[in-house]
Image 1 (cartoon, rainbow, N blue to C red):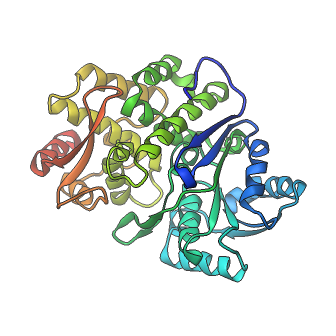
Image 2: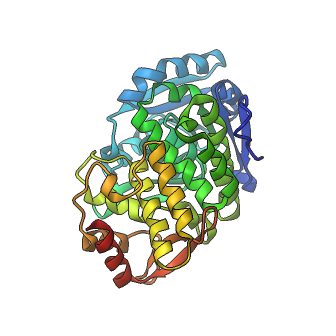
Image 3: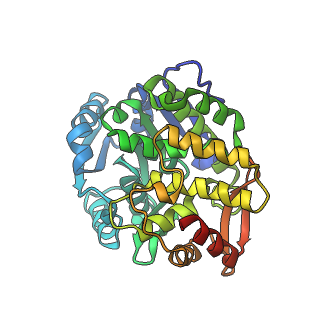
Length: 374
């Protein structure tokens, strides 16, 4: 399916074709209603456990439980503290034991109602409890709808960095309901939009043209919902081709190697993940231009569009600006995509033409960052 940004659409159903692990993704203004039959199928005993956080519970838990009750599904909620600190070994143990205490069987499913933190944590706990419970992703942020809820990456953070312990465990269903986004602060909405731009920059130049043409209005609901569908569909096709990130799926990390380094070096909660990724994409294009691979005009367009929608286009425009090139490169050295001690970067030969560079020159990268950060 190719989503048309010029035509507002109703709820769409996409599919990730992974054989026995295939699943549907419902996207749009009434995705929860569209997803209820799939939730029933994922909960054959008519019961489920919903895991969410305090903020999401206040806004959406009552509605979800009411809708589940309408189709005969009994639900109990576990409400966790919000934020990245919940992606820990301690919380993983708590959830795994809660699933076991609830008497869940392998054919049952739990529901992850929340953003990327909840989805990653619940998915990992589901992967390890009884060697694999089912789970339903119900992402409530734009970032999680277009990125972390699709593809089966689950995990927690360790003292060494983000998402360094985890498992590939595909959900049984994804419900990306647009109604969840109506309560998002503008900053969170823009942070999520970075992942939509990322899809276009990796492999869909036409999508970038359409996003660019809308300018700052691209995050308005009627435009955004079809952009969400396009980005999700793009990611689904890559996941189908490379479920376990052995090859081209690594392209989805455009901007992330730089971005994760920014997040690790910045004070806690000062910058958002999508902001760090946006600044990372700006740097990835700048570095590609420095290497003579990407036209300078393409890099200028990318950075201009990020600024137009209110996203950082460079580390100097992040909320934290006190960076050390050496420290950032050291963080990048620890990235989980690396192999053989070499730094892997996702770079670009132009808009819509990203590629994997498995052996970035550490000295040249340090020199580049030193220049950019001065």
